Structure formats: structure tokens, C-alpha cells
Length: 325
Image (cartoon, rainbow, N blue to C red; front, top):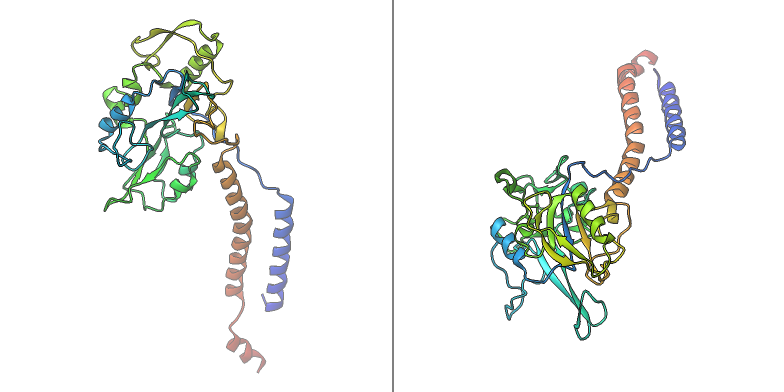
């Protein structure tokens, strides 16, 4: 092959690739699906009394130290999750605080911990697979030995959950892992295990959705039984009356869905949860990445092949000069 033929072949190949790329539109990835045996939590804000037993149990089960985030060290600290706190209960307050679960002159409590997204951004953003989603349970876990400390997961999470232990000589990411280390002993999430009112319940997401549907079908004030601990476990239910719920289960659709689902009588935005679209960021970003990479790989491969052919067939300059000299 002489130079003229080589350049002609290169131009023809480039034109063919450009035509092919233009005729193949980018295929958007859908949100990932919930595993059939996914595990999760139900938090019912109307049942929470703000006792924070779940916060203390979480610290004990995960070996986390006490933390006081205010100078006065009141009972309600820590005020937010951190490198030392994986789960907190926050309070919503308005006006005279006369009505539980009321937006006007009322108050309410809300849990904050990892949502265990169905299509988690932290897993998608992690370059070394330190963040993983279990294909069976859907629990999002963290591998400190694989982590390189880039904190992409911190920036990617729409709920602001992964926290970094900046004050440690060996910093790492901290987040709720649904007490997965206790499963081998037949135990489950400590926050749900100790909740005295069943505001936090543990179970399969399928059972949680059934319990949500049952509660929403009740009329406000109607007598019912509220389970505690683990759905499908020993009966620890107690009698109560149904609350007035918003017609919105937070986590059902937000960002492709989450495995912690929330019920409330107060709007979730007032409780500090963001208003999110149904499509996950992971689906959007990975679609963009694959489109860009897919458009680059083919030209690079063909250019490499042409370079190989050229090296094999084109004679060195001095050798060509010898023939014509």
C-alpha cells in the first residue's frame, strides 16, 4: 500500500464511521430494577415520638462514638448525620407547636439515613467499586479497603448521605449499611429493632409496600394494629389509630425509587427531603458516558487497524528513495 492509497482508505473509513454514528441514535439506559428480595425500611413519621432510641441503638450496633454537635450538648444532638453518626431523627417545628404532624402550628419528626437507592448514584460514581449494591438484597454497602478517598460518592448522593471522616488520620466514608453485619446472627437493622412505636420497620420492600397500602386504606382515626420490629417476624404489634397521611410515599418514585420508604402527614420538602425527578442521575450520566465512549471507540479501533496495515505495507523512506534514486 502506498501513501496515496493509505490516505484514501483512511478518508473512506472515517466517512463510513461518521455516517454510521449519525445513523445510530444514543440509547438511553432505564432506571435499574428493584431486586425481588430487596430489603429496606419503612419510616412512618406519624408514629415517631422523637425518643431517638434508634440513634443510640445504631451507634451501639455500629461501634460509633457519642457525638455532640452543639456547644450546649443538649439531648437532641447530634443534629445531623456525620462521619460518627449514621442515623438521626430531626424535628420539624412551626408556630405554636400545638399539633403533631401538622404543618401549621405543628411539629413532626423525620428520620435521616441512607435511602439505599434502587439505582444509586454513589455506586455509579465510584471509580473503584468501593460502593456496591447487593444484587439480592439491594443493600448499598461500602468497602473501606477498596476506597481511594476521592469522595465522588459524597458529591453524587442527592440526599447528602455519605460522609467523610476528615478528622481521622485514616479517613473513610460513613453511611448506613442496614446493619448487614448483623444478618449472620439472625439480627436486623438496630434502628427498627428498638423502635418502641414501629415508626421504623424492617422487612422486604414487598412487605413494606403492602403495609403502606394497608395504612393508606385506613380512615384517619380508625383503630388498627401497628407492627413493630421486623415485618414477617414475631408479632409485636400494638393497638393504635390511623393518622392522616399525605397521598405521597416518598421513595416510591424519587430518583428511580429507594428501599427506605417514608410516610408522613407533613410535606416531605418541609421535612428536609428534596423534590427529585423519577429518573436516576446514574441512568442519565451512564447514558451520556456510553454515548461518548461508544462514538470514540470505533474510530480509534479503525485508526489502529489502518496504522497496523500501513506499518506492515509502507516501506521506509530511505528504502523508497533507493528504488527511485
